[in-house]
Length: 309
Image (cartoon, rainbow, N blue to C red; front, side):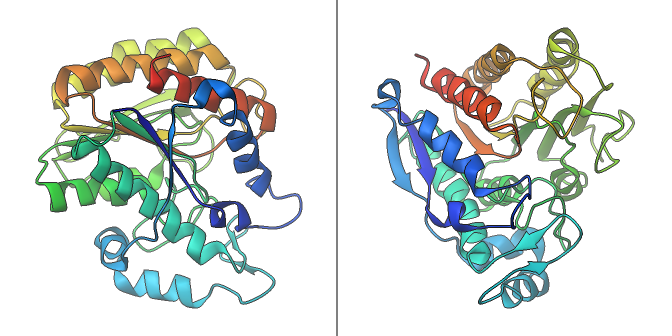
């Protein structure tokens, strides 16, 4: 077995417009980094389109139909001040979530040790009936619900180290005791959620807010003293990572000072938990990251750690 890589050209073709931070060059930069010879053993697969019934399990059919009906044939449509669709956005969202689901299927079937989904648009801000924060479909939540419904897993965890709190994932998980959401994020910051007091119906939400200016020490402490113990107590059968790299010190959209090597450290720490509790089953999904060089370096480090090379 090996690490699988899921992506699709439509995830690059999704284009929110000139000067939008969530730009196609983000994914181009990640894929360029993964073209290095060090990644020749990656199993590269095309992300399939997702079945809409799987999306409906998280978002509801009315939201999904309305969103897809509003994808423009040309030009762009703004869903809010930050979230914009172009003609490729519908397929990109379906391929992003489809890649996440395919990765879950492969890891559970032992066709892969783990997987990284190099996808966009990101998903962790999308709530059940609301697109926001550059996000259309919440791929991490969809993959988690699919793992329980289709594979019979009782406990699925999502760990999110994006600099922004994944309000959408928390929204989908907070009343589901069999789903765990752990997040490190800058606080206060967009979207305004993620206080430590938000704990879900069964202490299945673990938020680790970090003050602006926090760096490697605070980031690692948040995991060692908060998220990792809570994750071990939950004892997941599958671990999904919302891998946003915008807590990096060079990222322009926030004010944390996480370093590239911290992403190797947190990836290894999460893999250790997965080895203890869920037979190593890890699926990682690209979320944010807006400095192209820092994003590429961080994603490369993350995937190299998943490959354990």
